[in-house]
Image (cartoon, rainbow, N blue to C red; front, side, top):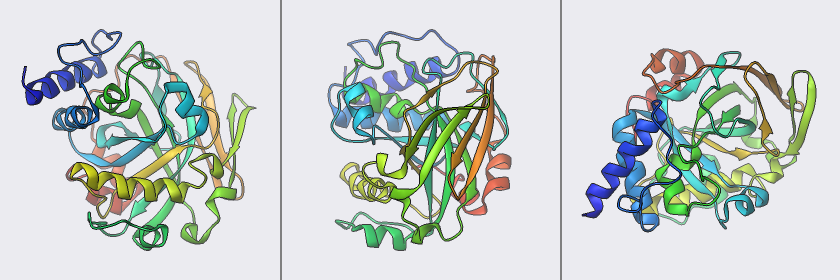
Length: 289
């Protein structure tokens, strides 16, 4: 089987599962990406099935997260418009295998960061329009997600799930984001605490890493892209019906609630939700990388 066909079939398997199909233990050998380049190709093929994107997410930006899945660097995935949710919205959790919530810091880009590099943190921050509070509810389409190689994690969109873009942080570009303290409360009780430094030492370092990594795969950050940089706390387990609040001390909070709903991959009016949150994100969601 040619590499292009293997990528297409891997993407079809992931997307079929994302839409409610049976979840395989891992991608079958005949279609599983054999290396990271093939993993990236499968993720690109998935984007052709899932539709427009609003930017990127990073998995495994903490030492603990990297140890858990046996990697030594972050893993990028696409943020699809159809999985963007608003603060306060009920989030379906019925088919989510991971069932955790993460408190994250996200950046919105004001301009393109082309492939010429390397980019410094100062270069990257100069291209940032805003910093936002964010919550991710990751998921996986693979039963043995903790044991599969990086190539399959890439094909599975770096375990992307639902994403909540919260309020903008005034003056966020000038803040010491590494020092930001965070907490996640579940049903009124604090379950985990963390800080921005848990994200690759500094969320700005994670953004810079992505700006330099994407050109290796023929991609780059674009004006309007949202980049959510990874969890600031140990991910907090949730159950259907749980009320969750992610607090970013001194900056604000985001509240969500999970519900025992099955599918969440069905097409929806993502543009309406996106535009209501940020006009710059709305512009980005018109097309995907």
